[in-house]
Amino acid sequence: MAQIRYMEAINQALMLEMERDSSVFVAGEDVAGGGVFAVTRGILEKFGEKRIRNTPISESAIVGLGIGAALTGLRPVVEIMFMDFIGCCMDQIINQAAKIRYMFGGKMSVPMVIRTPEGAGLGAGPQHSQCLEILLAHIPGLKVVMPSTPYDAKGLMISSIRDNNPVIYIEHKLLYRVKGEVPEEAYSIPIGKADIKRAGEDVTIVAVSYMVKVALEAAAGLEKEGINAEVVDPRTISPLDKDTILESVKKTGRLVIVHEAVKDYGFGAEVAAIVAQEAFDFLDAPIVRIGAPFMPVPFSKLSEASYVPGKDRIVSEVRKMVNL
Image (cartoon, rainbow, N blue to C red; front, side, top):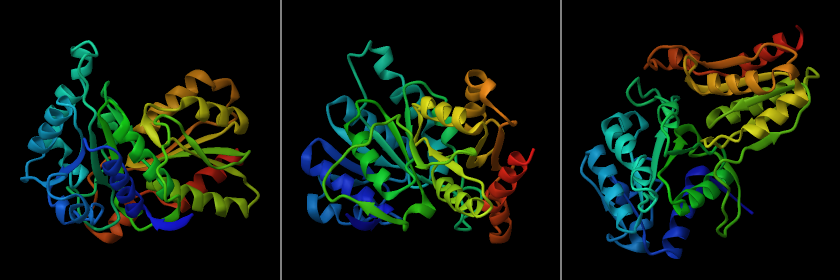
């Protein structure tokens, strides 16, 4: 398998699905020119302007376009340039896309993918660096996908395009240039199936998106201290593969949950509640949640670096947990 970047894996998935299915098209701000992160580069030259459309700077219009197109039988992939701007189109997403299939008794569906990059690390400030996935995971009718590797990015994009429900496909900006082995051919990864990125016996670390990479780095450091950590990547947070998480916790007896979004009311709280309710008797230590502080993302690079959870913090929390 070739070593390609995360962004190239998404690009491959888009092109393969556009070749396979003429109903698939791409729309968003500047996407015909490749987009701000160059993920859609080359699509215009290969498929022409009927299959990839630049849109006005109106997130509500972009998502509305996607909903309307999906209802007529097309499979749109629309881009919100930064996840922070998802607030501009929440009515379209929450009250239209997510509810149409239910309100029409399954006779209508919205097979639409909303691509959007999230996350800090580029010094882009509080309005261009947020992780808002839990806002969308709370909404019935939406699927929320968060791939952490190039391999997962390609397989999950193909699955998202083929799904008959609206899918929020979240890409972390710091993952775009990360390389990994990816098959050239098309393949799909089931939405709602977690992946154990590293097997272990002493502690379970559940991490999402870019934090999977950070958790794996922490696990490598812990191994030198004789602590064998298992890293579980949900890959999709809605639907959530809670069975894989529960089985891992039952094996290790300890749980640390890591996400870049603020810790308060976050994904970690949901996982902690599930484990506390369904696997409490297997726990040998209190559950630990690691996330960002309850404040906007700082603009200063130094402050931003301390805001985002790092491997040293994970290592420290695991050490304390194992040595209780």
